[in-house]
Image 1 (cartoon, rainbow, N blue to C red):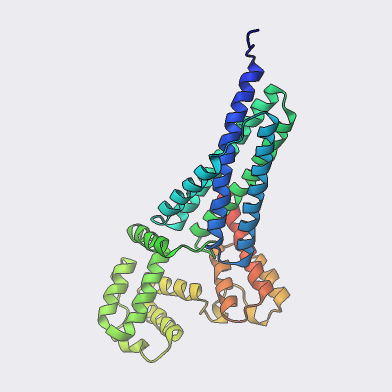
Image 2 (cartoon, helix red, strand yellow):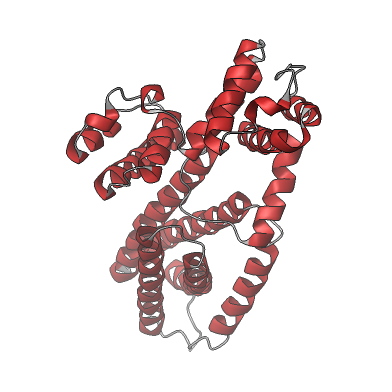
Length: 329
């Protein structure tokens, strides 16, 4: 008797092919999450990444079980292929800034979600409710991961407390990319280095400041003005000298560097009377901030001074919320 090929049969064959592809990509996702654990800056992020890897393992089990239920032969090559793909991916990432690696992760998650959506439609057509339920769960999970990575990227873009630290090679790659575009953060770091150098090389360091900021500014007639103080006092003095001499871009960049280092005075903070607030009151005040730069200023100040866990956590959570809003807009 001739084999009858129905639309449902074709749909099932396509579902099997797509589930195999999703399984392979999910193995890559799990291995990538475990690689990212080493880059996590905090225990909370490490826990999130480990949970994601464990969840990916569970999804692989569900996908494999569904393939068996569809009488699909076991795929013994997929785990090996996935390990090779992830190894190549992680090796290539070392030549990229960390944000480029995250964008690659984001592309993977979008592909997984889109394939799951396709499987859901196929399963509905083929009358396979169990596969449809699996696909629905995959769509939801990958949507959550997409939102998480998008928020991490937004935090990077806003210059806040990043969740992932670059590897040494990624720091070099990121430095090269940033030197080409010369964003504000590089300018601040350059000014910081220039001001530190001012105590050693005097007038020559003023040329470094000018080249970093991109303006012709007179920082002061004598580098010895900042020699006798420590770094924080030197930065404050450099900001005063730049402001006095009309070099506002330099003064602003130095001020931003001081904020990033947590070396602002209490009177300069965006939250007035912050030092007098209890931990609960300080955390509540931080949650009211709507400017990401102000949140990072408060976070840096708190970490450097009293370092109260509740206040630090509130600042990080507030920044993450603002980054998420920025990513959605």
